[in-house]
Image (cartoon, rainbow, N blue to C red):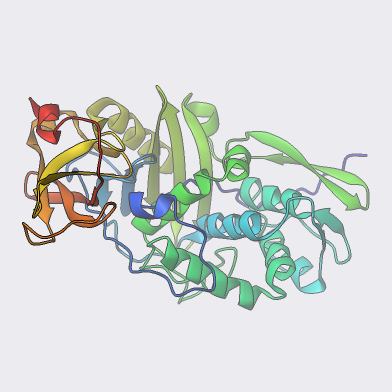
Length: 383
């Protein structure tokens, strides 16, 4: 039996991100969030004719911001809010958990799945309904199932946002319905979307053009169609979320993968949101590149210790995404944090390696000592 619950609501698609230092960090919900590291805009100039009031283009792998326009201006996010709701639903719940819809969740209006009180459905299906069809009621049902109430769930949303470095965001609800104190920025949305894309189920859901969800009680199916037109009109598109309200305007978080490189575009209050996103993504694929500067475990320099020089290395590879024409402006600087000619322990942090693009510092990573490290010096990469 197929149940069609038709609605005139908007359906939204979103994609996301977090800096290199937080990509592999564990999820944080109750702990005090760490101080986020500000990510500079690597390239100030970009494609012309962007209609959006605010926009960001990010490399999903490196977290580098390739283009920014009013990137840190606080704006209403509309249903791109549901990116964070889905992230917490997937990270804190189990996909096959059964959710019973409450009267409060069923009463939520505007863009909905037309849920009825007492209906039973798995958490995964609710998350799919929230991301693909942008069900406001589904978001409240998710929140109540995870935290007992929407209010408690929203507290977790804000803690998670801060943990990801989204320091200019404040959520008041789970679905993006207009509220004065409910806001985020283009940069923060990119950080959150980038993180979401690291979750296989999130990535799988947001790339679907069409799908269906199955209700357990009553035993019916609902057809869903994604309103992210970029999935149909741009062959490389694979996510993520749209959003529209009068206050927010037309918004879109869009991801695309070309030649194994994934980029993420965020446009807020964009009259031509799909055109803007495509223009940003195409510009990024054509005009920018990702370069691996250093491999993990590679010897970087020699620290002059008391007895003999000690090689230092980095734990993780360093990748940077930049304009193709600015590659020659890349520089690295070794900064020692320990006084020369002092004893050194194996595995001790002795300094850090800075990556600069002209006068702009892009990254800073620790330099660790080890008794035996294989590899060449960093400056050989720039010959």
